[in-house]
Amino acid sequence: MPESLGPGPRIIAVGGAKGGVGRSLLATGIAIFVAQLGKRALLVDAATQATCLGRSLGVVAQDTPRDLWAPAPYDPRGAETSVPKLRLLEASSELGPRPDVALRSPRELSRASNAEVCVLDLGASLSGRSLDALLDSDAMVLVTTPEPSAIEALYRLLRHAYARRLAQRLKDDAPALGLLQATVRNRLGPPAPLKLAEILAAQGEDPGALAWAELHRLRPRLVVNQSRSRADLELGDAIARVAQRVLGVHLENLGPVEFDDAVPLAARRRKPLLLDAPAAKASRNLERIARRLLTVEPSRLTPTLPGIPPPSPTHYDILALDRGASDEELRRAYRKTREVWSSESLSLAGLVTEAEVSAMVARIEEARDVLLDPSRRRPYDLSITPASELRALSLPPEPGGEGSPSVEVPMPVLTPDTDYTGPLLRAVREARGIDLRDVAARTRISPVYLRAIEEEDFNTLPATVYTRGFVTEVAKLLRLDPELVVRSYLRRMRRPEAR
Image (tube, rainbow, N blue to C red):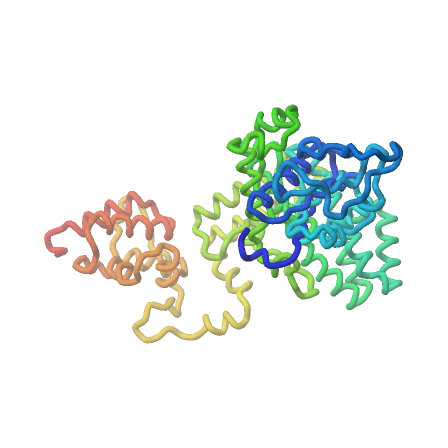
């Protein structure tokens, strides 16, 4: 196991608000992966409705004579399984739930078992005890499938989990707790965490700061099981984006588990998938997810963040882009974001109204229009730049340097017959308000060559094949026809008098 795990137990809770999504498949896979790394692992079958994991892991009923109607003696270490280093603790038996297990917190179970990693397989429940187990874990992993009811249940679980966390933290603040309880009752369930935090922030500074801090601290992970199509494989990212925008919850997508015929075959044989078909694609998916979980730095498990509301999303946030994105990257991001916010998107199941979708689509269209228009994008970038950065940007360029011009430059007239010269390319760049250093940063071309292109210093430019690539990238950045620019520029470069 990676050193970043550190000493002491780690608790991973696998949950979901709908049955049949594959929680046991994921929890068992993670526990077996940990044990195969040589670490002591405890798998807790915490679904109190029925016991089901013991037989697949080689745990059989004890032959020791005892009262038929008395539960087996409680062993805090769990029962030995067919997997070395892995023990199993079941929270229910044929006689019903076992209070000595079901009523213990995950940390109590982990300490008592002396396990290095404790994995909980929770049932499909929104009960207080199930939510407490999720919230008390170091890593909350939620499982869903590509179907509307499962995704709607996922969002419902996030709302209830956040409300439960606030109820725990506000127990000594009677007015704020009363407001929380009244809000939940009046709405027949908790509202979106973002909305709930705003309601508590209106109550007072202290409950508001606590609500925002807990919203920042809520960092669940997501796994989409039974993924078949390309849309299914991308669904996790779409759900994470929607959860961030609508609920205010930072949901980390751990990746999909692909649909695999090996899964039901292993279930028929009563064997865990990782042992029955270790080379199956679903097994490789499980190992990848487990590895990602176990390599998270401990400091990231419970981040310490300020109790302040999240900033309003920028156009770049709406499209999930960096500030330096090119026009082609903007167009791709726009198409992908529109797919996420289409009326048929699975990621919106049971979460937003048609009016809210229309409002978000309008924001997406506005972000695209502003960022694809240089005359609007540059002022917008300045408007969202922090004051400290603006002061640095406002320093005048050195004399003779390559800074942006101090006066506006008109856009040259361009036609299909235009002869693209170096000075003309510079004039287009300056008219679009693009600094030469920005061109170098976004194209990864040395400023020496960029300056040589604009000054038509052909002796400084490299071989023609490299110059062609440089001019092509510059033309793309300036939103010119690369083929016309390259053909015209290289024709000038090949003239005898050019050398």
